[in-house]
Image (cartoon, rainbow, N blue to C red):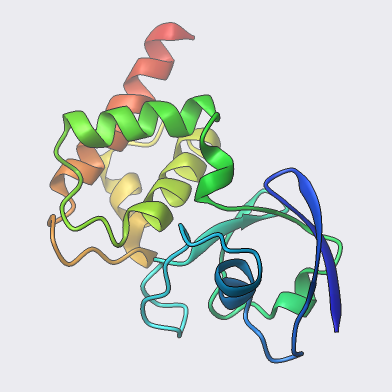
Length: 156
């Protein structure tokens, strides 16, 4: 099937099998390897991307279901100011270790910052429940998100 969608602001077409996941289409057909595949069951969050502005698990989303959609991957957030602030905060707060979960974690963190500007630690932790990290224990990740939330309040 021919898949037509916008990926990171660029219109693209790809020939995919009806059973192809969005994660596989992004990685194998479009060579966007920043989206990681972990569990392939939608549980770990490593494959989180934005579909029409909302975080979604690309490993359990069929590519053909995204025909006509606007998909943004971690590569598409290079110039995004919130993602930039989060990357800086992740580095400053030691929220990175192996890095496998980081792309999905950053996409989710960006959504938290934009959707829940008044979120406190319990809510941030609740929102991160769908993103698994086996390395950091989440302390640095939560601190990084809270740091960006606080910076935005101060600047706003």
